[in-house]
Image (cartoon, rainbow, N blue to C red; front, side, top):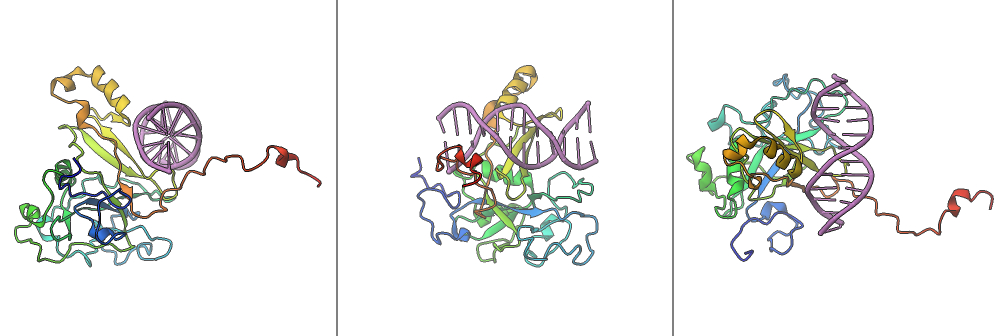
Length: 272
DNA sequence: GCCACCGGTGGC
DNA sequence: GCCACCGGTGGC
């Protein structure tokens, strides 16, 4: 049924789907994206002015951005949003990251969805709302009017909430992923740049147990029939991860050396 | 000792 | 080549 209007071309390398601007993600049909932001280390010193240099230090920090990050309230680009959601979303656990001095991993800084009609991006106020939209994205394409639920005035006439720039790492999410069962949480963890994978999905059961594969979930459900009694089934789980727009964010696996060498002799090639 | 994160790999 | 799964381990 790809003939359907499924508006979501997942991004870039998807097959077919003509997208208009071609490589330009800003023109996909309707997609959900998760711009990521590096939780800039500390979040407590919010109005610290530009705080810790890192943010805009440019070059070495190309992907760190912050979308409308709760901490830096860097509103410049995103003024629009703020009002209706003063209770800042960012569902993620409060950044309890202590001081992680060594390395700061990226994390999702904002959720956005692209209007299927005007192609502008709209920030989604909470992770839960985002998951709800994502679950039905194909059947119920996201449009600016959808956002009236939390922004009564919004329409396609309004400027986009956010646009791509290299201050943020953008990732295109997969559509139609079921919302986690009540009491369960779906976590997306972004790996560091240069890793062999972009991200990992974990589910946290009501008990707090963290599960990292469908097999682990199956086993867990079998051990806890009470959830199954509530209707929790495997169809509610998906370990699909978003794709980063930055092509080289993930390190490619070195192609297995398909024997360009003639063997071991190189080990011993001393002399001659 | 735990666990968040990363790498390896087998199967597709 | 991609991705699901899971073992290892560094840092706490």
